[in-house]
Length: 214
Length: 243
Image 1 (cartoon, rainbow over the protein chains, first blue to last red):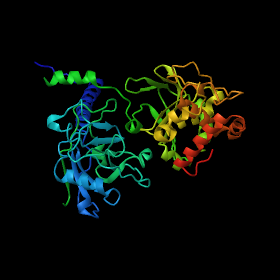
Image 2 (tube, chains in turn cyan, green):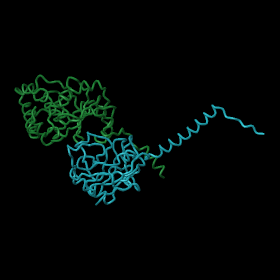
Image 3 (cartoon, chains in turn purple, yellow):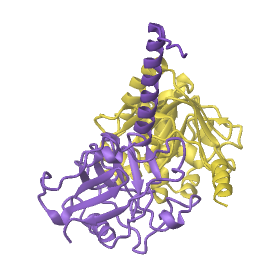
């Protein structure tokens, strides 16, 4: 005859504790692994669109980002940017410079593509369109979400661009602003970072970049 | 193969403390001190030591905050003598403050860079000459931006024919920054090192104490010609410029 052994109160508490711990561990693991968990999805109907020809939608790992372009601020740069977006040249381009909660940079069309990334040369690539003159504005404030052309020296802008994730007043009058993120800043904040290096090793990429209306 | 490439890359990654300032100036470990100034200058300071340059030959140490608070008003007072337009014309926008600045292990008061529009200043530079050093270093930017206006061969002709400058500023023992009693064409011993240092010395004295230089040139024709040359060309850069 098998005797039924009743568990004591302390054993019951220990059992509940172990179950809770397991749930917490698996839950945390899922939350940590799924970095896109709390990122909101883009709803174009809710977005106030003043000029669909100057709205670009960028698809990144954690969702879609809507960028309003400002041809009135920097006509030449926006024209070129729209050309690269429209022709699909930014698709699969790496976010190779990412500073946590500060900025993300992409758009190297020579050494920054997913299928042939070159870590030794990334950031130095050129498009075939040549350099652009900087279109600086001393009045344009670099608030979080500002999209601007990246450059080495002045008047060397080409295809690379960056988006700032916080206000950076130091950049005012330094870089050519081309637009602003009107939705999706939280998706950009989830892009893989590389604070301590010149570039991000095995970076995130732009999945797709297109104009809402061309 | 992928793993081998990854391992090679990991060892080749140069470690930087990247922030928005590094992205702009390529100098790590800087923080903003004051960017809302009347003439548009942006003051930054070293929060930690940094080494820059292709061979990392320019190095500077982090600042002690109390030292910075003591020296900043002096620096700002001196740089406020320049109008925003004049600074723009001479590519100066960022003032980087740090301690123990050196280039190739030789201590220096300032390192100007017209491409980055920055001037690194050692706030612990010899106190006696500190204010003058600020203007001296800025002059190197003015000259670098307007090389043809401050022609060194032409400048050398102001001196007596028997006089020869050294080959370079650091390969000479003419280093004393004290004002000569009897000038004879040069305000300091350091003026005798190379033409650009001579120009920078005169410029800095004019910025600090114009009356004193005017007194000196009453009996020194060589110095008078040099001062006139500087004044004439600075006016060509900016008609509103005054010492």
